[in-house]
Image 1 (cartoon, rainbow, N blue to C red):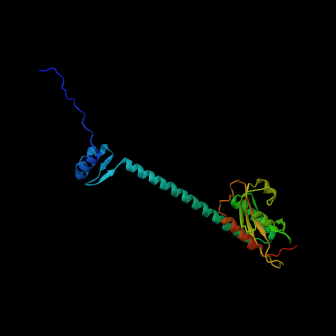
Image 2 (cartoon, helix red, strand yellow):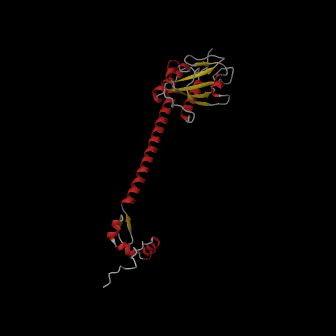
Length: 235
């Protein structure tokens, strides 16, 4: 018996190649389906002939997708409820305004619904001179509306600014404002319409922003405008 070492070293077994394994499984699928212990080890669960249930991994993905859908649905429902509540308050506010007995009562009701129904700091009606300005309304010099909104501007939403002074005692608490152009036509007036503004003030800096929609406050302004046209403005 020779004590010489074997001149040919043993090589480690070659690693299997996935393309070959994949091709073999495609050609012999039943071999894998019949090996239940192997399927369970790799996280798959056999469920009848030719059916494999993807266990925890698939279930986890489905649960995550369901949670995302549930969160999105909750956000949509929350927004829908908020919009519905805002629309309801707007309609009730419109009814309150239409019950006004005179221009002064209209201004008082507008301020009350702004605070009581929308949580604002206040609201006001401003009317350009020349001509009479009802008690409780704010007077603006000729051209005042254009100076605030621009010559063709209809609305302005953003931070409150010095010199506006439309909210009386509530002015200090107003951080942002919404200004809506109006053009009421008063009975018996020499001019067909007068320039005016319906103003809303929020106690929050982001209560009114330039990127915000203004459909609800614009609707309230239209109600104020049409209601104000019931009465002549006395000098």
